[in-house]
Image 1 (cartoon, rainbow, N blue to C red):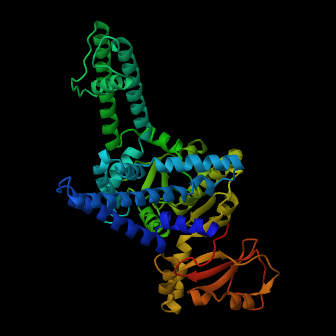
Image 2: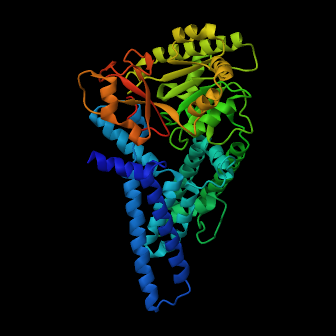
Image 3: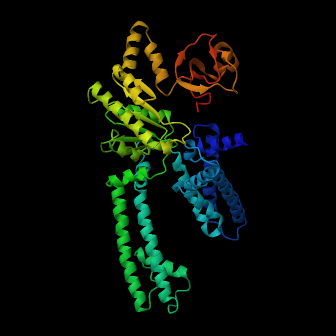
Length: 502
């Protein structure tokens, strides 16, 4: 059962798997067939026998689409479950509300509306399935205008919720009031739905004229609804305008703080070289599944790709770390500044590290149920400050300048070694991964026996070292080195081959 659930999750939510690509190609083909059936069917007369066959084929396709939506929602795993442990009822609530939020995403709603074409009067909604192709298009890889527009509206979703609440409240009050006043005297008001229709038409200033007030009090209500309509339209115009020009910074900050983002990566600091880090993250991470948030006290750069979220703020201030939902993040990266001296850059990095650890300690009640603690990676420019960064609480310290200079010096004596190591360090080719030793817990075995048993080389992997339970790494251990079940493997491969550490 668990294996079947993993297959369905990979088929609908893991773009890097073969089964996902197969399912998507099948769905695309069915979408195109569905649209083709619609185009062929429209010119046919109603009494044409072929038209009924086409309609039957269309209903079968829509049932397949409906089943696909059900499987996609059922196989979705809410991101919050990757971070927090929950009791049985909390787990059930997280599954229900997480799937509901997933179902209410715009493209999911488009798919649901398209399936409603099973109802004869809504058959033209099949054309909405074409929008499904926008999910995986690679045409606008770096500057996707649709992604930019959607990001602008996504960052102001709280404002839109307010505007729609005003619209819904005005429509509801206006419709009920109009029904109570006009129901018994206006021949065109047969039900509450008629009054609601009138209120919606009036408040949006469409004014079809199919229903009009006949009493003085009804006209007064209509006047109030018209004024409310002008205010509502002005509210929507202001929100849309401010969203597109990115003018409401405080609301954008609150939007992320109040959002449901979890398992994201926070990058603290941004300068002229940070784009290299972001490029590497785009290669290492699926940004549709793991969001990357940049936290810095500057305005969002115009050339920043829309795949990255930007939250303005000062990461050295503990009071501002709430803006990026750090208690729900998977990892934080502190990037060293390049526009100042190494000592000053490292001092800021260490200060941010202290601040983050202090913040997490202050919010220990929120993080105590996490499956794993926040992983903090700090970049240090001066080797003298490595121990200070570790003492501040960094889980991993990267000496970028020392690594680069060491590779240069080594390449002088051993030609080609820097090129070879670059292929290991830079994503896109072979990389070093950490994996669990497969199988159940066992007694300690020698490193040589373990390698002979696993035969990882036949799968394209090469074990280069061990990571001890204490966190110490041993590179190229001797064959008689004892390995227990809690030891992790460092191996070289093009893609992960073993289960990652929990």
